[in-house]
Length: 143
Length: 143
Image (cartoon, rainbow over the protein chains, first blue to last red):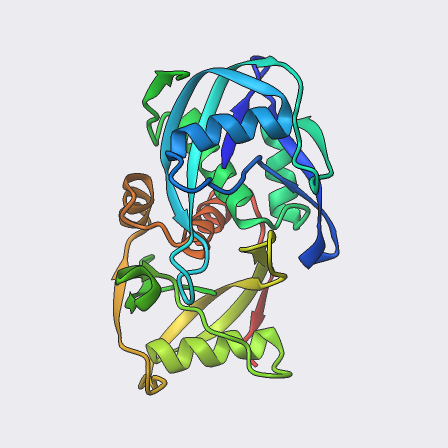
């Protein structure tokens, strides 16, 4: 997952129809790691493919495990800043709308149940901790 | 999932060996809903069975969806307070240790990667929002 921070402070998100949920979900961008692909490369690739954005700087916040009762699946948590926009290249089966929301809009949606996607809730947690100076991020240039 | 708040402010958690992860994970209590079981009843039952605690008051914070790419699985987020201790009744295949941690200990573990379970990270988010007076909870007596 990538939490992409625009220079104006808003966050890039996706509105995506999720078939298992039978509805559109508002999420931070994410995607599956290709076989053997390093997680950092996957984050850069998925952000570009899904949203068209490239970032000047990246930071790895950590990892979350979303289904420990039956799976070792992990989702890496990355932050991106210094965004510039190019063309998205969606996979054939992906239909999504790219939107930008302020932190306070996302906060209100998480509080009210408008956002229920686990990784996105955790993205908000990390975003607010980072912006409050509580949980540090170490930035590195784009590869 | 239940975020069980002790009267001294600490939170009841579980240290549980998670086979898919090949290691012990620190988590808030949670369990699967029985066929046809109302979520509130499930929360009360799982807290008692896994930890031995009963709560005087309960509040439903919301729901999280942990695997929207391939599942409609949801985890209800409940808070419990006014805790008193009885005997745990674990399922035969459950081996877990009950512990209590302060909010700041949990915060530090989430920041450092010591806690990576998605529901538990979201439990911390809700706990801190609630305690800061930002995300309200509506309390109801135990059934």
